[in-house]
Length: 145
Image (cartoon, one colour):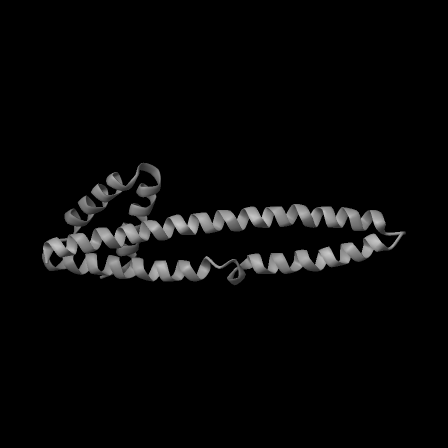
């Protein structure tokens, strides 16, 4: 069975869940699955959906850490620019440049905080949706089995 088909079914559930809610997404997901798959193929498909959802949860838990992505490099560059700007503020002839650089560093630090918070929120919601998929699949497999 092609993982692309499984991934598409999961993606449709996630998109529907974000737009219209759990009940609508569950109904459409189950309708899609029952129309496309029959008998043993249905059970196999549901198990693979659960397995792929678990894989995505584990992957997203790793990516949730801001020090594993580009945010760490952004943070490190802000610290280095902040140190240089502080040094420039101590020099009388470059004080204005240091103040401007430090102000820019503060603005970018706020932007980084907002970006990390948004990322954590999105990943947390997506993990919760994948857990819903696992619960849905397990309940359906339990009824079928």
